[in-house]
Image 1 (tube, rainbow, N blue to C red):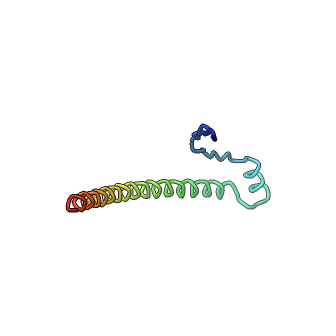
Image 2 (image 1 turned 30 degrees about the horizontal axis):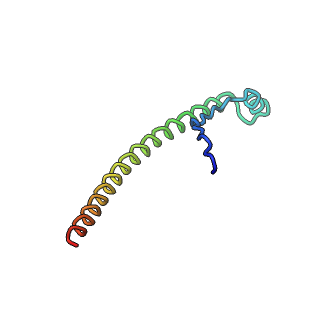
Image 3 (image 1 turned 90 degrees about the vertical axis):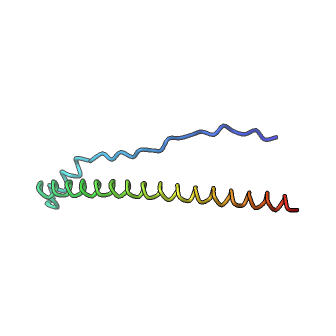
Length: 92
């Protein structure tokens, strides 16, 4: 008889991005971006991240509402099926 192994529950991984200062220095040194452009780029990335966070919150809320609706609908359908089986069994 096979023995079941214990299930290991893992927590979701949190990704942390560290900014490499050498990359910023290289971009500035080689003239690809100056200091003002770097600041604008960081601000734009921050704005995009905030928009993404807002969008994710909207998606999470919509998904919650849909899950609630379909769970209620499924419960109602299961209750109707169960009632039909009981009534059909009683009639037989």
